[in-house]
Length: 526
Image (cartoon, rainbow, N blue to C red; front, side):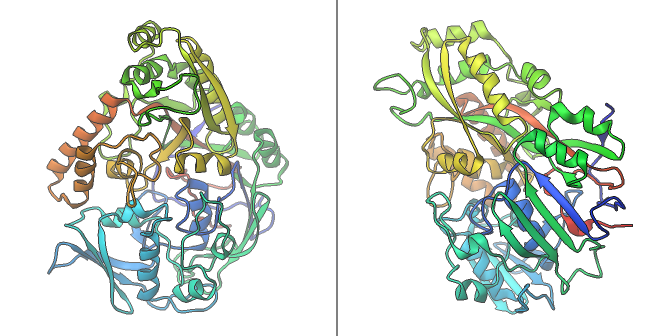
């Protein structure tokens, strides 16, 4: 196979005369959106579907550039450096015909700051949202925030009156199993309207005939049929047979087959995402092990030993068929704060790992459960299976429990797992995003995906300070110091940087978007 590497640029999805019709695009990937509530789950496939229906103030295009969406201009206030001013787009309507204005933005941002929101970390520095007139929003922060626009690219705007009329003002408590109107319905300003939804079966979208961007984007596609297909062989078979036109996750074992099939292409690019394991190091004792009265993961030597036991090159070659890049830190190379030396720091050393285990008092090993998704990341369960064998070499018996992401992710959010797989992308392209969600201690504003139990007051303060530090050199120095603590403490076990493989009809030309979030308004059909 000769994989086609498509660099990130301003190019967009072009046409296919081989689509189901001149106007329908049939789209598939392994997992479905978890919910339609735009603030309940900060999860890739959930955001990718919502991006077709709803819009933020600003958005990243396929090149990764921040461009206008519902806001046309934005800048810090000339009078107050703690205020960002956004000028809103005129003449925008929601799918039900209601007019869009600043009250919807104020409502949505305040909603996204609430306790059940999975996006609150992105707005942790916000003190107040003001709407001085119908087309102006002022975001007041606790000190100047140099990267506020980057925090808003996935912050979807809801219609306030629609939410009030449908008892949807509160964010869905997804982890608590709550079902709400907003979890199943959507009323956005985006290029496509939600027509029907059967979770885990099929979602149908149709073009928004009143979209503000009808004269700005091609918008040749008038219907999208999205079908989650968890089984890799079935997903590829659907592409090979012509049942679907575009799949986001070609299984690595089928790359040659798809690439060598006439009329089909594989497009490949590095993803802005790291796959890693989390460890509950904060608890005095843990439930899912065979050690009574203490927590082996609380000993940094055990965590370091587990890190040394993982053979990332073997996973890269055998499990991923070369479609990954071994990682030593949980930041992708796209991100401000990524460090080449840190990223090369994880080296397999079985004897060294055994010595650390013995030094920590676990020379005879222990057993523990590993929680793993089986429908979210590329070969996620396969990576976990390989890890079971690798950790066995240092005496750790791993009981693997693999399940769909809809059951897996709540274990992390509610801290009901001790050893788990997670993947993390960074839409802000800045380390603060990683720290806010994964390193800061879990409280009402931060740490919603931090199931490690790690909570360092001094480090928390340093993380919070990043939001208002406009001296970028000093800010980057603080980021480097935080990363040193993360690495020294071995809070997470990095595995690899994920690679994207999109499969599609040959006459669809696309830039593979690093966020793995195609925006179908860019598609043109010739």
